[in-house]
Length: 281
Image 1 (cartoon, rainbow, N blue to C red):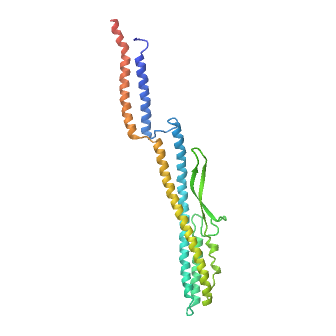
Image 2: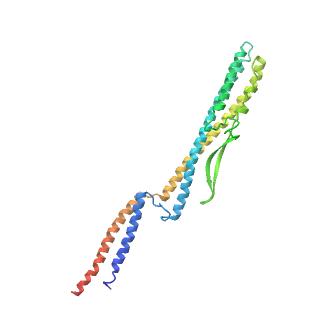
Image 3: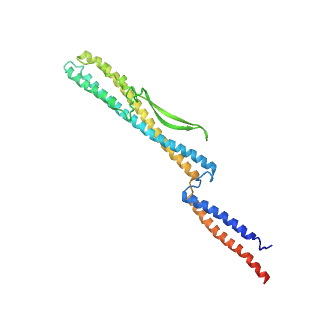
């Protein structure tokens, strides 16, 4: 039945055109912003997941910066420890040479004193941003170790986040390498006593330098892991929320065609009542 009061065809064509226009606006927005899920109304579940992951990514990026500072602190201490090992080795050579009778023990002791002063200076200077892992007091507040934030552990989708630290203890060369206890060399007997003492100091320094080296390697590995984790999480968020441009381009072309057809269909439907006039001529 045809009616001049109600144009059913135009109503259907108009609804179709409105639907196509809505889809077209959504597609154009996703293309212009690059986000298929840009707000909670687009997809509440995906948006909530992506925001949680984005907050974790921001946290891990901050951890990367903290790890870099931790690496630098340990690297400075490790370099100082290795230098101290070299100075102790040089002192050992001097003490070994003092085992002979026909040497100037006073001059050897002078050289040893100079190297002791160098070791003391190295221990004092081996700090980064106020933290010294060669000293008894790491931060000037009585700390015996340095904590470096290494990770954020989350249990479940909305579970609590737990911060995980890597603790690096001081090697305490100030106490463990107390060079004031080293026997002064004045003859072969005192040189023999000093040789056993310097060997103990040397092994202590080597052990400390090795410990710092292991800590530096651990921080480096953790930093690499966190960097890879940030990349993977960023890629995951992108997969969930970013617009697939190839797909959006094809959808845009299809919707533009549908829009043209819907406009033509509405035009035809609007002209239909006019054809009823022919029945009265």
